[in-house]
Structure formats: structure tokens, C-alpha cells
Length: 395
Image 1 (cartoon, rainbow, N blue to C red):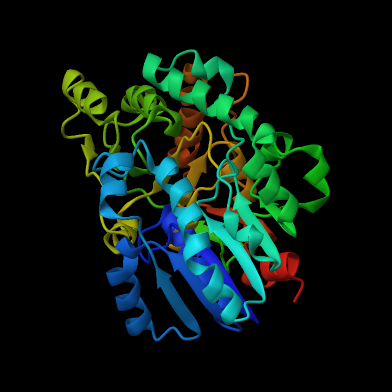
Image 2: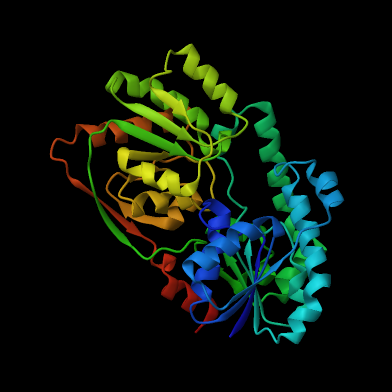
């Protein structure tokens, strides 16, 4: 089968959304001829990986908008206007590549990244079976917690929720939904934002791939904990601060290493200085994924206190590298982990203090375990290549 992947975010050894795009390419190319539409900025790293790993059956179509578009729309960065750039990118690739798609007799077009239901994909107009997803976007920060966010973060969440409500009225999105053979969502929380007329096309399937589904991880006592993620409020940065104040009362040997960048970095640094935690909490910023994975062996726990999330690739990275995880029952983590001994932290109808206290109790449980038991993790079976491909493609 000839499959065209629309993978705007696609880059090996990067993690997050880029790793999702890359995992679809590797999986589908095992038995199919795959064409990939992705950004030109990823070209060098992609071609290097293709050569070193000898990946076959893949042809890349690299495209970026003209430089002046990047400067105007993005303002010279990759943050605030990324979705606007993404929208224009999809408009341009349709007109640029629709003739090539027809000439190469593509059997199926599949949009995989970005995984948001707020942006239409004009490739659905190519008169070829079109799969839209895995998509997310319906996850929301619980109201009790949102009230404690900064004004800027509150505004961001409110605007995001308004944009979700607009989805059902968008002409281009409705055309995309109508033309799609299947609409893949990562969790049930996004279903309510899709018009009911299209619900018969919806399948709930995690965006990630993984081959292991049961973990028994050894308990260590290095007294080292890590957090990996963007330093924004909805990722639980305020919870980290409250949590570490409690951890200090449990065991003064415990340290916290933070990997990530974001608007709350300065706030975190001020918290560290104010509480004389310079030797207890370290912020490393963003580091290469391979280096990050190598560092996992020195930690006991990954703390992932996200308040809304569509995925959580770092959870799989941690488990695959023998690192225990304590996370929340946000939609993303719950779509990955079905059951495990340490349990989820409940973020619904609770305050930030209560969430931090739940994390503290689980960390205490972990370090108080004198028997050094093995913790058991059971994952969603739809994370497997075989199960997911069969569910989506029916082959």
C-alpha cells in the first residue's frame, strides 16, 4: 500500500509530538511504501537517521513556507503563532503536492501531527481515503485548579476553551471531518467537541507506540527524583514547588532534577533561591533525548504532575528505561497506563495543595517500602504496533 503521511512535527530522537510523527513513519514503512510531508527544517536530522538506521520504503517531501511568512507569522520564534503557521502550511502543501499525490497513485492519506482537532487538513480534498488523527485538544485544566493560575495562564486556557467551542462551527474543519474515513482521538474528552454527526467515524486510540505492556521495575534508593516537561502551569510546575516543600520534611537527602524550559522557569529559579534549595533542585533546561534517556538510571522516580495532557511520551520513555512513574489521571496518562501499584493522583475536584499532598503520600509510600518490592505497570494494549494498525487500517 502507498500511504502519504502528513507529519508536520516529525523528528527522530526529540520526544513529544515529533517522536510521535517519527514512530508512525518507522511503523508503517515496515510493510508499506510511505511518503511523508514534513517541514524542511527537520531535513538534516531526518536524513541522517534514515541513513544510520537503514530505514527503507520512505520518501520525504520537505516543505516550509517562504522565509518572509515565517518572520511575519512566527515573529522569529517557534512558540505563540505555531498553530497559525501550521494552518497556512497545510493550505500550501495541498496546492503544491496534489498533482504529485495523484501521479503517484497514493492509496491512503493519513494526518498524524500536529495532533489537534482545531486545524483543518485540506489533503482530505484529494479524493483519496483520508484518516484524520490521532487528535487531541479537548483536555481542560480542572476549574478548581485553574482559579489559582496566573492571569496570563488563565487567559491562555480560556482562549483555548473558546477555540474548542468554535470547532463545530468551522467550515474547513467540518469539511475535513466530513471527508475523513476515520477520525482518531486520543481520549474520550475530545469527543464532545466534534459534531455528533461525525461520531460514528470516531475511534479512541493513543497517539503513541510501545511494544512492552507489563513492567516490574526494581525499587532503588538513590533519593533522586526528576521532572521532564515544559515549564508551564498546566504541566504542574506549581505542584512541584508545593511538593518539594513537603518532601524536605520527609527526607532531606531527596533531590529534584528538572528538564525543560518555559515561561515559569524564572519563577522556579526564584523559588529555589528563596528557600535555599540550590543544592536540592537543579534546572537543566532542554537536553538531547539520547542524553536524557541515559540519565534515567540515576533516578528513582519520574514525577509527571500534568493537569491536562493528550499524551505523555515521557511516561513510556521512563518505563522503557526502568524508571518508576507517578503521574495524574489526566486524559493522556490514563490512555497509556491502565493499572499500576503506585496509582494515579486525582486532579479533579481537588486543589493544588491536595494534589501536591497526594503526590507526597505516594513518594513517601515508595521510600518507606522496606521490602524493596517490584512495582507493576500495565499499559493500554492499543499502544502496540500490531493492535493499533489493525484497529485503524483494518489490515
